[in-house]
Image (tube, rainbow, N blue to C red; front, top):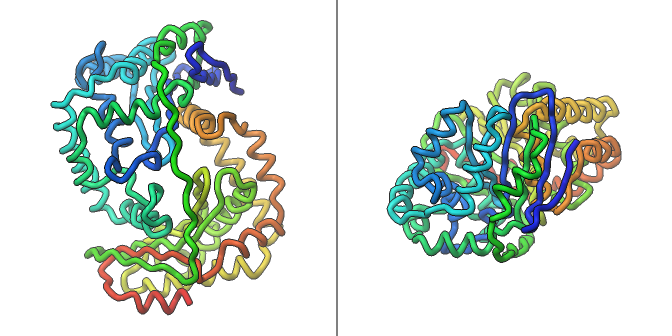
Length: 420
């Protein structure tokens, strides 16, 4: 499905040819994210993502870049993760050269104008405030602080108003020099590819300058002997809660079983938590489970937006379901359904050129290789009922629970009783 090659400067080129489409996603993925930051520059990864759209030597203004992209009906955006960052343009395939020209210029020769930096500070501060005003989003920042502590994985991806307002042009240049090297990037094309795709890649991206390869500090596992609870007081109409615990890293084979466990518990309207919390008791509109992972750690979480007056009832049901799946084997029927769900959802998502580009891009910049869909599904198919039980028994221990609550609450006592 995909081909991997290298440009003379060490940049990896990944192509995914889908000749039956008329569109194409052009993506540059970089092994750079907020866990590479130090505390005094927390938020610079995300800020730099913004700045690349503010003008380059060839296209000196954000308006010019937007005009060109809008003028051919293309769409563009970027994303910052704790371990990687991506910049993409999706266009009709005939406009691939324009997409290459714009993205390469942004990354090779961004102006990083001091005036634009000062102006963008206000934009990013408002973005941070927007997130804080949305409990269903902000709770994830709070939860990672709770689980990962005062380490880069526990810091807010967007930084703080203090760090954002302190940044100077030199900070961005120094950060770029430490991570934005061709050998730490992947260039991905997914969609209808022209025959000269290799020469186009060389034409526009061979000029990326060589830079350093900075490594992030490994996560220091926190020994936990009792539940951790954090309450963020906010006047809301519902209680937002995340109950989580340590999970597996992306290099741990048990992550496949943890993903199936998560699916059985909280993915879809037929999942255990959805049925017990929403359908049978009407305690929430949204409830779900997730196993997320980084290079050296992970988190297994249950999120719910619960009725204020029933928050303890909802948490009791969630805790009971976690303990039940730990103590009682799941059925073969549940296991098969979860595997079929994974396979079906992947088939649906893989119809998107953006999904394909991002999947191949971040897998390569993190692993220097790509787990194909076939390999991934083979690992999923190997998961047994016994594997699910083993993973559940390893992960689900009340003394290792982390509970983050956002709502009009002040006392932890009532929550402490539920987690015992």
